[in-house]
Length: 98
Image (cartoon, rainbow, N blue to C red; front, top):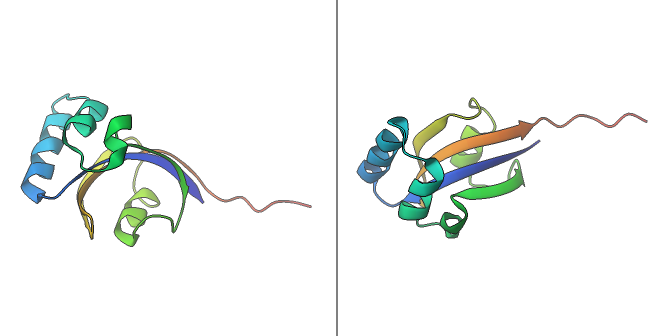
């Protein structure tokens, strides 16, 4: 199973909640990520690219691989801080046929 997502990482839950309110009110996710995120992905608007299940910390993976696409989820607390996560796409693993 693999997915692509973008996120915003901050150290403060209240700030994370405020950023989400701004996005819900029409602020562009990528601009908010560039402005606020403490992750190196901020320079890419929060884009994390494609990753497989198990490559991210458990709480992050849980959201990415179980929640609806194209919705901003969070705040999600991990050992890194508080995340807002938008799942761009998700591909279920399909067994290969012989």
